[in-house]
Length: 133
Image 1 (cartoon, rainbow, N blue to C red):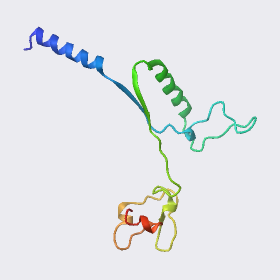
Image 2: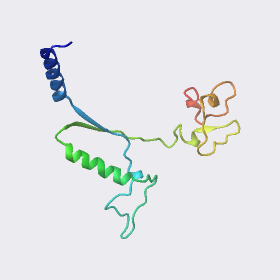
Image 3: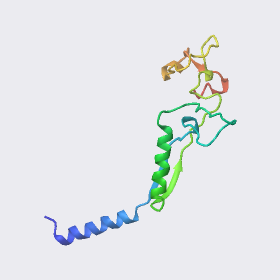
């Protein structure tokens, strides 16, 4: 059984760890394309439409902003990730061609098995990328 002194010392040590903790907020990929921009209009009376609308994204961003504002003194750092893609990106059909030069249909799953071997189903459109694919 632990003595009172040992429990007290461990509790004090744990409290000190908590006091010295740093809080880092990571916000992952908060794209404008998911939200309806507030107060922005490309022309008088015209509201822009999000390119990739996500239900509830506007409210999510408001909650994140409120959480940051309410905890600003406690947050040591904020990191925001950015998801970006080149025009020809591995996730886009234009990146891949079959033996006849055709691209896969959108949302086609291209597996590792599809790009390996002597006669792959799909190869990188750019010959310089074929060793990487």
